[in-house]
Image 1 (tube, protein in one colour):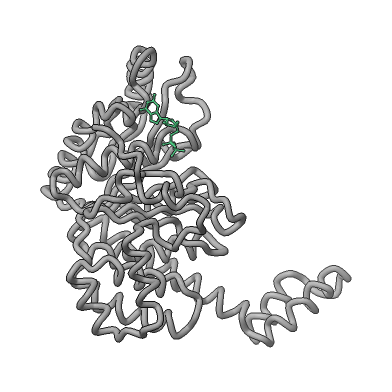
Image 2 (tube, rainbow, N blue to C red):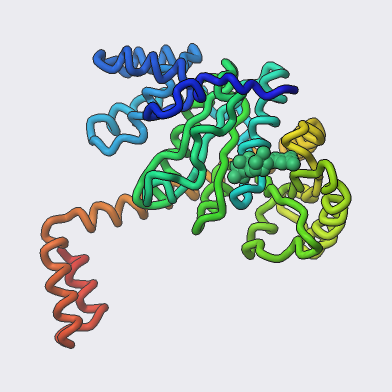
Length: 356
Ligand code: GDP
């Protein structure tokens, strides 16, 4: 399958990018920006699968403006009954492993089967500097012009928690808009993998074969989270190495206790570039889906994730409200000084601040 090098994105090189990489959507947003739409209009259009409205609703979700947030919440609540009918797949791997090439290949494979694929990203670095690790400008050139695909770069935010919450909400909107496959991409920065794992059904670790040191350099816990390890770039001279890596990972995976899902994590090889092994990845995901739907783990885990996010949101809100409080802000500096001068203890200072 040839990659369409004439993507609209390339034609626009040098021009600042819109919030969404879906060009058509972006143009529509700009056109409609002057007009304020009602929650009703938003919901009707999102449920009809209207991409510009979906994009605009996500912009509301990502906004820090209180009025926007209020509107976003109303839209979300009304979309919620129409969400959930999807598979959510998390993909992680170090920069250069081939995540965007893989997502392009797998995404196109799915849209060719009339699936609707939304690609979201969690990149906590995007708020630190403008050039995020998951830079999206030249990525997924074919998928970006595919009418059955929707690609949205990582929301920016000061905390991973904030970024993750926005992504969670964006998933709901995408599902309500009829996207049946949600792919969430991340790089292993900080706890971003854990955040993605806590919002997906299937977690896929992308690797490349090295020189026999496959297991090195993998953060502790990632293998435990993985439902599959896919060794990419299994092409050309690299095929043999990929096979060796596969054996090693398989051996390593057997050292871990069985998963609650009773799914035995799998190791596959693929070439995202040559589109080899992609169908096998999909077959594996479908097997996982069948197993976990039959044994009810699928629903159980989504419920667990909802509870987790409920608690996480409460904690985040409490913290935010606390630090936003003017009395707290004023007193905090004083208490820090008191601490430095040995006039109070951390516990007394905290107690006093919390009482405010
Ligand atoms: P990301 O940083 O993880 O998103 O990685 P990219 O998808 O940008 O890929 C990094 C580089 O690896 C690019 O030059 C790709 O063309 C190349 N690449 C990706 N997948 C494959 C593959 O399956 N085989 C080969 N040979 N190269 C690949």
